[in-house]
Length: 623
Image 1: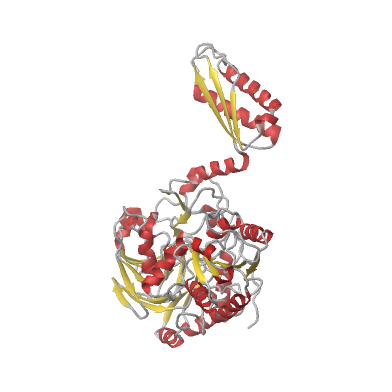
Image 2 (image 1 turned 30 degrees about the horizontal axis):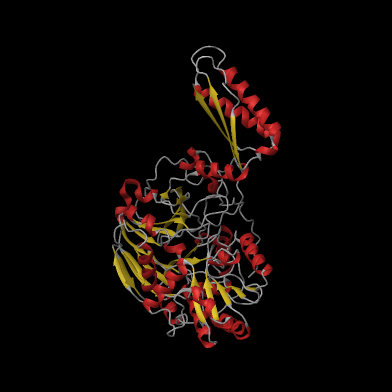
């Protein structure tokens, strides 16, 4: 097929940008300003005059008269990696697919997670329409927001596979004040009727066991949600893809295929876990010292591979990291992880009492996370394990975009300590869990959908997936490219984007606070991180308006006081002049005005002298 020449719509990055508090209440204006809110066939780059920003005075959605559409509303996961949560709404019933979180970006200091915005569900108690929550698998980008969301939406019934259910319930133990979750365990072929939705789960290969795709029979047609998936004919520790089942599903007539997009930019076929196992075995066979494997705690198949190889080559295994230990405990209990007696060390510190060539250590931290196990080992901060020359350290994961710098820093630290460092770019020791272009084409050929909607991924991934469907043979008007917050109306004979949207801006979790850190707080944190804080304390006579003594100055992260005496002298002088000028009239003094005046004057003065803008906090004490 001849390749079409397309213009890629101009698209602004989804990374956090400070806005005013008023803009924070609007729904993701930065995204709507980045591309034309039209169906995928309209790829023209809109001019400023052509773009219309629709006011959001209400979230109320009015369906067309006659044939009521199925409204598909992604609250996260489209235009970003993670934070997956999607609503299927038809008349008075809502079905939810996944409730995940994403990790914070580099310009979000102090933030733990980012979760979906559920304002649409809370408005007018719309959450009472929820007939069920379907969980595709146990990765945190699909289940991580459950403790923060489920109670707020009425704790509706959930449906999850055994492993996903176990991980969810184990994590819920960390939230003892929350009500007990109602989770029904599902398996391959499990069917349930939820209102007017008829749901069937089917097994899909990913990089965690018990991953489920979903077939949903709706009043407007059959929908297939692929979940995260790949086709693996030679997986490790789980059955291969059941193509006969997929073909049977496709034969029912699929109205809409919602397909994983994470690997849509990669040509070819994803690696099989069998190939990863063979390459890992060559490392175990030749390693003369300890082997330290860093990977995601949820990669149960990789953990099993490492345990199997350790047992074959007479090594015992220790684990570092709360999430790693927790998942090992859950998967052993549920029978997903199999070990011989004595393989797993009771304490990782026991590894120091065993010859190095009989030790394997598994830890988190392959993404360079600050407090993860590998980082603490690399920096010498772990209480039991430190790097030894000759240690073989395996990064068994691909680098998530945005983490390249921190991962490189960890690798460099390990190499300086004379460790042998291996990663997926040097040899195939990690297989992603996402279908690449060849597999996506195959899924399209099996399902033969009438309509196609890319899900799960950055905008470029969604775009590549949509273009792939067109190149495969789908009509442009049948392919919809949407992002979080947009509403997709699915009818029996057409699919389209609604003109209205719902809130999908970031809700940030910081410690026990959920949503109480907004953009103003983040902007202050960024300012503190970039230019520091400058506090000036002045004692002023209330009657005369005169400054009693030389103001005290506290500086953190701005300048070193002992080396900035001239700057501090000029700053004190400027502070006294500003205060005494504001109080010279002899009238009643507006001290709020005086503080603001000092703040603005000093801010301008310090920027003029240093080209930096610290957070200026004037403290005026009246005596």
